[in-house]
Image (cartoon, rainbow, N blue to C red; front, side, top):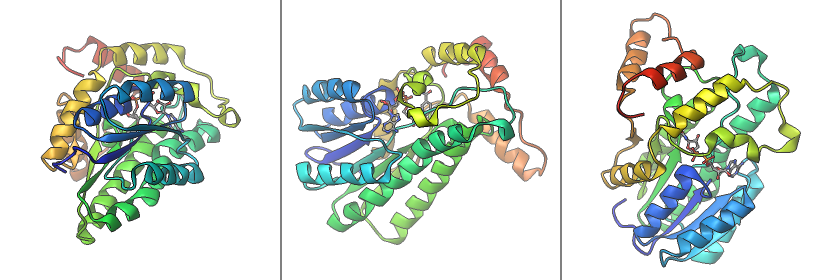
Length: 292
Ligand SMILES: NC(=O)c1ccc[n+]([C@@H]2O[C@H](COP(=O)([O-])OP(=O)(O)OC[C@H]3O[C@@H](n4cnc5c(N)ncnc54)[C@H](O)[C@@H]3O)[C@@H](O)[C@H]2O)c1
């Protein structure tokens, strides 16, 4: 997608972090923005701030886990702006980093994290893409994934992001087969300085987990995130990549060797590289990678 000015974007998880930075970046390009988020108060503040860029804005409280709420978001977006050109499925949560075996994790963690990160993305595609294809104007779908969707490990979060990446690759193929005017990209950052470590703030009560928080890991992760890239930098790289028709957007380059190692191990038919979260976090803190 090359021409953003005067077109309309919908962004989920737009009240904080990467979603908010993308909203600001697209508003600066002259796009009208529908901001969707589960957190009402933060959403209202975000809508107010984005409207200061002189574009039309709308906030729609949405829980992307619920298909009917995403369909409602679609209806409200069309009511306000007639057409949607840019969809960003960005809302995401990370379950508490745990030192358990995957078989021990609570079903409620699975339901919540897959519900937001995978099903939220799927419902976004189901609700918006048919309309975007039908109106036939240039458009784009951006799904926020993570390096956790490419590398092994990270338990439920990793599973949800691998699934969302596979979904996005199928989306890309489908849009191509349909000879549509819609591009697609996946944003796969490493650590970014956002509020994701506080994801539990948006966790539905009925999905409270019985697994205990590992506070040492949470503290380590929060320190690492604070030293991650800034959301604004991620938004800059993302927009440039979309303008240049890139599907895979990897703003961090310091993990390239780990990605190469993953695929060389698969081709060598050996074993996965180890992915002990505590070791990765400690290594990231102590390492001198220059950028995370
Ligand atoms: N921060 C990182 O290091 C990092 C790295 C890679 C990928 N990501 C991905 O980036 C995306 C944005 O996360 P962030 O880091 O900006 O975190 P964040 O917590 O700052 O922002 C996430 C937003 O999503 C919203 N949200 C949560 N559950 C929702 C739901 N059910 N329905 C609608 N909105 C919901 C939150 O209210 C919040 O505004 C996520 O998909 C995340 O997995 C983050």
